[in-house]
Image (cartoon, rainbow, N blue to C red):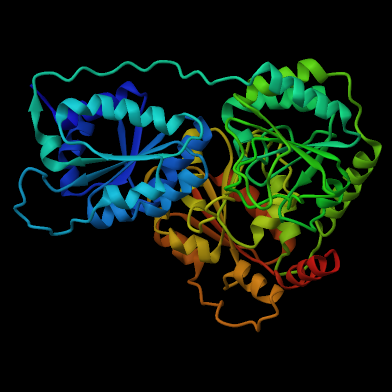
Length: 545
């Protein structure tokens, strides 16, 4: 006889799962015991939200679903933000929650909420497992749905009595390769015709172009096409950012530096743009460039994005076919290349400013200086994200992780912890605003307990800076968005980490270097000054309108 929880764990092992993140409750105890006897490591976090962020980042970096676990009711509801984070960000993830026994009701409705219903709008699929015999199929289907395009979150609820129930046998379903449909020959022909007719084509790489499996195909595509390219925030790092064809990143939707090139293009070849991401440009019905959409699925027609033509199918196969047809037939438009240099020169302004508190441009410049090409920087969400998206040059795919879909605060630290677990030989840094850091700062204990090598940079302005900037853009008085902070150095030390406070601009690089050299978990408190940059951004948006 085999217990339901043993079947679940065996099915997870069959999918290649080696780690589960979470905060178990009494309804999960059968599963916890089955995990104890398995090859799968249980990583206990201090909050369910952090467990979900870690599992989602595992999916983002590996292409294989990360797995997290919580109990019923409040524990399951704490997964909500992480589920939306993964689903909007197209990160494959499996959420497993417990539930009271479904065949008896000895505790009435204590702690019971309809978790399956609450997860329905936040996931690709959600279901309650009602029998031991159905577990292998439920798990196999969950991993299939989470992984196939468009990837995302899948939720399984395992009631306590089903987890403890026994059955004679429950055969595990083998994993098989997942093939993706390819674009039709007619669609490829149409894309070739449209591209050859353009005088100033420009490539845009979006979030769906940043899948781990696409790195080689997209890098080759850009190199062979010889067309300048830019990227959305979540498409950043999909190809080599050091290329002499790279124009920049669209950190704002319009009137940003990179829009000087977008405005001159007569065709945008949009590779993998996902309209769940904040728009990288606002498409016009008349007078703007044509848009050729290349994606796994048809584009969602939005007010600001309605392509003129589409090539639907596996992106890697599509771009390779286009490069085979167009490679060597196109030359970079001199105007776009001249604009490229102007844009990059503007982005380099202020990189060596020595003001203190430190400016965002200087922080990005100095972080880039201490990070090797394969070093991973994980951003939380805040004002600084605009500067990292614009200014931070990536050279290896998936080395700048930011969220431009749900754009939730609190994900930076758990995301970096996952990266440090996956890449223990690389330098990994979390960059968090003081507001976002405090939303999951308790995970410092988890990072220390796991023995991670991780540098956590806190950009300290004692305010919710992004909303404060928006307040200024809208000409509202500065009100209601400032707060006090703990002593971050002592806070880090209380968790058994190391802490340092930067006291001058010149001290940032040596402080970061010392933190990486020293190893372990190291928090660096960096006072930041947004005031001048907020004023400049407001002026730019107004004068360029």
